[in-house]
Amino acid sequence: MRIAVLGAGAVGGTLAALLARAGHEVAVTARGENLDAIRAGGIALDGGWGEYRAAVEASEDLTRRPELALLATKAQDAAAALAGSAAALEGVPLVIVQNGLGGLRVAHGAAPASPLLAGLALFAASYLAPGHVTVTGPNPLVIGAGPGCDDALLRRVAATLGEALPVEVSRDLEGAQWTKLLINHVNALPAITGLSVQEVVAHDGLRRIMARSMRETARVAARTGVRFGTVQGVPGWLIGLIGRAPVRIAEEFPRLLARRMGDVPNPGSTLQSLRRGRLTEIDFLNGAVVDAARAHGLDAPVNAAIVDLVHEVESTGDFLTPGEVVARVPAG
Image (tube, one colour):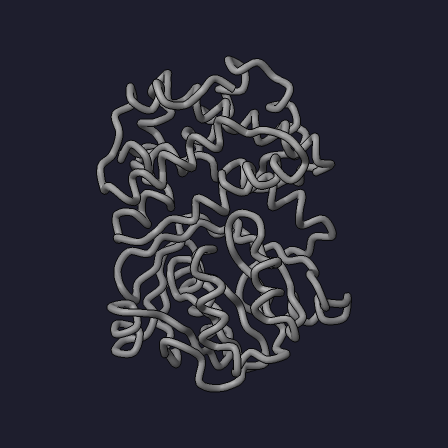
């Protein structure tokens, strides 16, 4: 099958390489040094699913119509990526594989004729260098139906992607997305401070802020009728408990996540974006909690303050000290 992957970063590059290894004809979109490297030597994949160098077609925008497309850009780049390849994607089934919330809404507005599926990458991958990605956690890709997608198409896409990597089909992908969203709250404070996730969690004040942001998120989700799903071995009931627990109890969840990361410093994806000189997807992570709260007449002051601080670091290039962060994030 001819498959396009829009965005050949950590997640998109991994998906493209695995699909090519499974025998599919793969085209990717990329920019700058990454595009040059892929054109010159393909995508080098290593880590949890083995080593492979995938020869794929690469361009800034799609030049030919695929039979299936996956959107794996950062959330803030999705609309532009879809617009650049709009002619080639007209009516093509499209899987939106992104962190945060709102990806299906953006895609439906940009590609209204395409049947949409939502994807949640539970595998962990890192962009090591242009044209080089590594898998640090070989976990499944979860997919579910979106606008215009019926059960038959969902089964066909799951079968196709399942030739390349483990795939699970979810009937309640929204619940899984909210759980992954809450887990991804480990990313914001490293981006604000320049510290690793482990260093943030080891700091009493920063860990307490992280726990408060997670507790606030769990409470907003509960008030809006979301039922958390199980993601990365984290059961939905545990996320619900975080929303009801005192902060000192909720702090155990960031500690758990940090222990699962091991001893190698983990910068988190948001800090990695800043280090590469790119805007972050914070508006689709903690910002999505703020938007959901406002839509239901609620407040999310901790998450709102965190979003503002990430944007401040984006604009100034200067990290904040832990003390400055503690002083500027309200109690929640």
